[in-house]
Length: 377
Image (tube, rainbow, N blue to C red):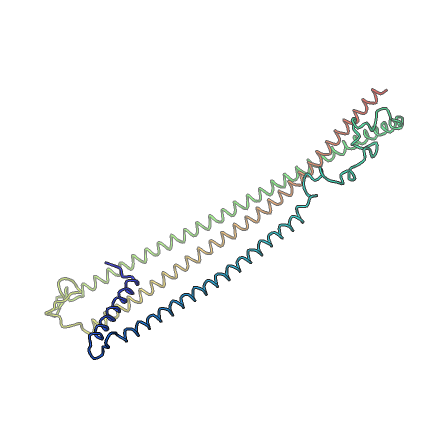
């Protein structure tokens, strides 16, 4: 199957138009009444008119192209201006950033080429205790100790004070250590009591949850048994109703006017059946109504049962969620208390360790000065 394109349709229309024009021209040329000797004026006029139309169409097309070119030139100029402004803005932003954040004094190697480095430098020696007075600097020499006696007396007094201070600090450290041990024992006993209390609460909660689940399962079993009893009772009633209907029917009672078929109670013999009686019609309507009512009742019971189950499930989920949140809050409080106690113990241990390090350092310093004094003597 070939697909017809719009170009094919236009070409066919042009060919048909040309054929029609040729046929009209033949009629005019070969018609003796309307023909002029030597030429066809109507055809010439038609050709002139077509030429003018083509020229006007070509002129309009050129004007359209010119308009589009002018529009494109305007758009190109606007885009070039925008690009020029963007480039200028980028250069200005780059210069501002360099002036603000890339100045020469912020470079890492600026101190190597700083013209004010000599003005900023410190003198060779500021005092006798200047740490820059090394051996190679030759700013301070050994043997210039002019306060030897005062310094020695001050060292002896300082050693005595250090010894007394070490004794006091040792006694204070022992007292602190004993207090820390007592506090640690009390804290440990408190934590054990809290853990035992939490374990008791958790066991009670688990016991309550197990009891609730057990009670719920018992209620479910009772409801299931009751439902089975009701279904069995309903089935027995339906069977008795069916047996009674068969016993009192026309088939078993041998009614001579019966018209029921042997294929079933719902079938009749066409040659004997005279139509349903009014009682039968009423019975049918009544049965239908009862069925409708029973169906509605069953639907209502099922809907009510579903609602009860949904409410119980929602209540159970809400209780579990509340219990879980309560346990989380309790555990979070316990964890906070434990963290606070651990931080306090860690802080005390750090202080105690620092104090012991200072005591040991002071003792080593005192021993060193004692040996030094002994060797000096």
